[in-house]
Image (cartoon, rainbow, N blue to C red; front, top):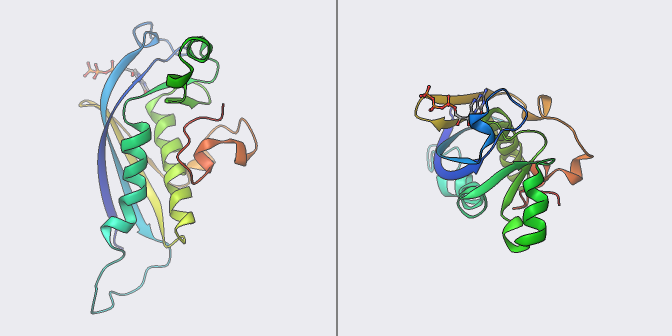
Length: 175
Ligand SMILES: Nc1nc2c(c(=O)[nH]1)N=C([C@H](O)[C@H](O)COP(=O)(O)OP(=O)(O)OP(=O)(O)O)CN2
């Protein structure tokens, strides 16, 4: 089966408060690569003319626009991180550029949140493609890969319409 594989790079900052590492509890940043593997929902033979699963630009355009304009340079914070209240009070304009996560913004969680968002975009475009697996290279020595349905492993803090990763829009928080 064909897979269309698209890679994008983004910068981010986060901190992990619930884990064991004191080092990770201070805000710090990474330059990350995200690689999505897309498959046809109903695979067919190449048609002998255009011979494409789908034009690359259609398959990746919305997704890469979202990564470039909303995920790149976003600060990622857990919903209960006190820094969120600080930004809401002191820098409300910048608070809109914070990607808010249910629990710590680990690479595992981000991979599944962004995979769910990508699947929402693909479904809104007719559902001809779905994301079969996703990889995020957080550092040159640490990569997380997830295959399957991200909704099967994601926390469910609220009904689906109130979870930004379930909506085919460019939101990165529900506040
Ligand atoms: N399971 C996870 N563990 C850790 C995550 C994560 O997302 N999931 N994230 C971190 C931190 O973000 C940390 O900044 C990166 O981890 P670290 O191993 O320190 O990264 P290095 O590239 O410096 O690793 P080296 O082994 O020194 O190459 C921590 N854990």
